[in-house]
Length: 98
Length: 136
Image (cartoon, rainbow over all chains, first blue to last red; front, side, top):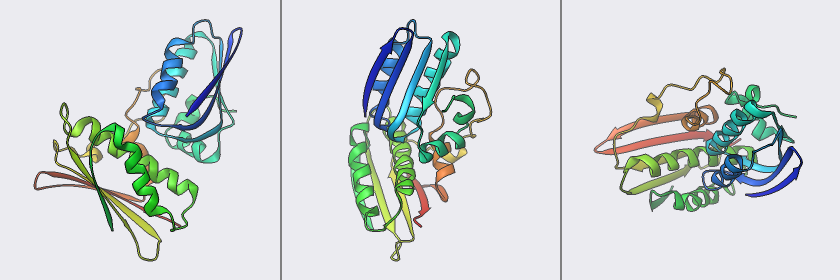
């Protein structure tokens, strides 16, 4: 997994690529835990995400809970296989997917 | 049938996934099915690595059987740790809001939803968990 971060004032964009799994999800959690101060809009760009496991879903939920208190979060460009995982787990109702 | 004997630690997850994916190659299964199987393998192996022998570590066996016509696969995980039936756990409520949802606890639920069948047995001190998935 690789994460490119783009900060523009109160907007933080995370361009994530590869696999968000047990091994890599802690990298994403690190950003979610430490880089959201003052962020009003968090955008996770999933265009190049190939795979997500429950470890990745866990971090998305932490991020969503944090952003519910301070602004908005969007998950963009989700492919159909990952969308299916979001639907099965109810995450499609929790996340704002565009 | 192929078997992999490996220490159940998170650092070996990649090796387990590669072992399974090599068996799936040649069956012509779709990327989607392979992703679902990888996800199930990850969730189960990580559970064994985290809990079966806690706080020690111990061995796991992963057995992959592809049907001769390539139409289905069954993958069996065997450990000798504490008896644990993951199927006994209640499914999470997927209708709750983000605030109400517990962080975590989705792993086995995802396995149940994405595999065609899953069964658990505890025999002679071994946890035996088998997942089955059609490949077409």
